[in-house]
Length: 290
Image (cartoon, rainbow, N blue to C red):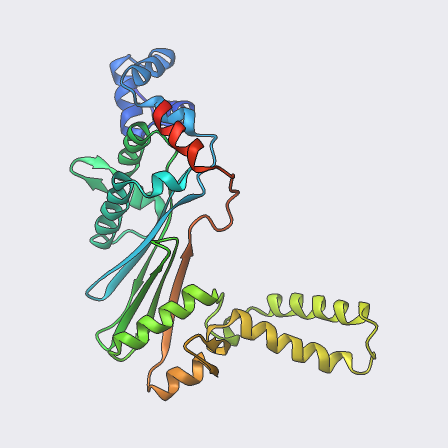
């Protein structure tokens, strides 16, 4: 009998999908070494060679349908592959499939089936055909009601993508705010969204900085409060200067338009991942040699 533990072990050894690992073990009557060979012969475990590589390039994409939007990031090793039509087709397929589902976790999304094959196994197949490590890194589903509107903005061909939900039906305003989010990288909607822990951490840093500058001790609290306001202006969307009219804050601008920002999401490809430097010639030769 093929156990779930055996399938998991084979998957960790080869990088192949769960269904392929199960089939390999069934075909080889549970013999692990033979199963590895079977996967290699089928070209499936080619993906295992890519497992230790860094996949920090790629694309993000957002799409809306009715009252639901999804934002997805899929990584590749090189920007060369990210521009490949097959890779673009993959991310389009993932977006469409997730948008028409009710999944909540990455595990659930990976188990979704497309023409009889799971997303997880589809990615393994693409690794074998494209020749680079690919990673379905994350996704988020954003919902609105009938009295709200989505704003979606994509920058640099999908390197930075943002989605915003706003009250009303002003699509142009929503797109402008999505552009603001993409350009100015807010971490929070408003000051109330920043945790007390984060505020105290920032206050401590600002206080120590002021003390190291040799400033008047009696004025330090006032100086720190002023600098803390600057911090809010950087990280809170409503406190940021509006990119299209920088003399007004985003919150004030939206209020004057009789609207309200409900929520937002922003993906920047590879953020938080280690990246490696490659030149274009190296990328071309890698494609030829694979």
